[in-house]
Amino acid sequence: MSLSEKTIHELTRYGRRKLGDHAKSPSGYPLIDNPELEVDILLGYVLEKPRSYLLAHPQHEVTLPEFKHFEKLIEQRASGCPIAYITGEKEFWSLPLQVTSDTLIPRPETELLVEKTLDFIQTITKPVIADLGTGSGAIAIAVAHECRQAQVIAIDNSLAALTISQQNANRLNVNNCWFINSHWCDSLKSESLDLLVSNPPYVANDDPHWQQTDIRFEPRSALLAGHAGMDAINYLIKHAKRVLKPGACILIEHGYDQQAQVKAAFSAQSYHNIKGFKDFSGIDRVCIAHK
Ligand SMILES: C[S@@+](CC[C@H](N)C(=O)[O-])C[C@H]1O[C@@H](n2cnc3c(N)ncnc32)[C@H](O)[C@@H]1O
Image (cartoon, rainbow, N blue to C red; front, top):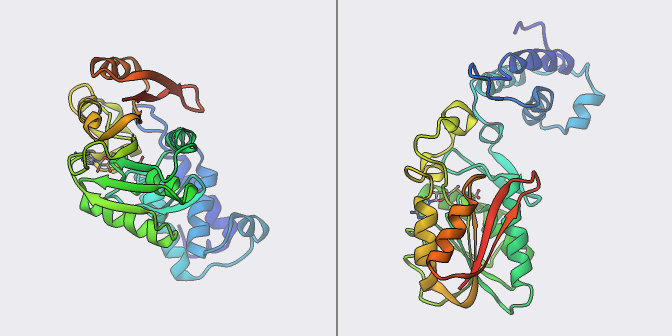
C-alpha cells in the first residue's frame, strides 16, 4: 500500500482487496467469510473507533503509525491468523473475553452448554459446578456471571490458559469462580458437584480439516483428542461419576458426528436420562446425562 492511501475509505478498499484475495485456502476451505466486516473490525481496532464511525467518516485521514499498524494487521489476517488473536478479544455470552494463542477462541455454539447449565441449576441453592478444560474461562465465567450464588470451579491443565481465564474473571468482576490447574477432575473431591460441564478437545489427531483452516493457529492441546477424537470425552465420562453427587448432571460438547458414541459411552458407565441436543445450526453438539 502506498503512503498516499491514507483515508479510511482508501484503507478500507486496500484491506478488502488483500483479504478478498485470501478468502479461500488452496483446497477450497473458506478462510475469511466476510472480508468487509473483518477489515472494519481491524481498522476500528487500530483507530479505536466503532464501525459506525468508519462508515460516517470515509475521508478521515489516518496518521502514519496508524497506517503502518493497519497494514501489519491486514498482513497477519491474510496469513490466516484468526481475528480474535489479532485483537486479543472475543465476545462470548455477551461478555468481552481476552484470548491469546494459549486459549481456544470460544465459539458461539458453546453457548448451548451455558444455556443448559443455567436450566439445570435454577432449582438448586448454591450449586457447585465445575467447568473442565476452561481455556479462556468462557463457560465458567458466563455461568458464574449469570448465577452469582453458584460456586464455579474452572479447571485446565494449561497454566498459560488459566492465567488468561483468571484475568478475564477479574476484569469482569466475577468473584464466584475459582481456577485450578489439574488433569480433568482428578483434584476434585468425591461427590462434590451438582453439575460438571465441559467442552473438551474432540478433534481426531489425523483430521485434515484443522490443518487447512484458521483452526491451525489454536493450541493443539485444546483441539486434538486421539485417534477418533474421543479420548478426552471417554476419560471425562468414566471419571466424572466419582465427583458428581447422586442425581447430578454432566454436560459435554462433542463433534458433529460423535453424538451416538458419546451416548453409548454414557450408557456403558450406567448414567441415566441421556439426551442429545443440536446447536443453533441444527448440528448435534451437546450430550447431557445424570448420575
Ligand atoms: C476445546 S478447549 C475448550 C476451552 C473453553 N472451555 C471453550 O469452550 O472455549 C479444551 C480445553 O481443555 C484443556 N485441556 C486439555 N487437556 C486437559 C486435561 N488433561 N486436563 C484439563 N484440561 C485439559 C485445554 O487446555 C483447553 O483449554
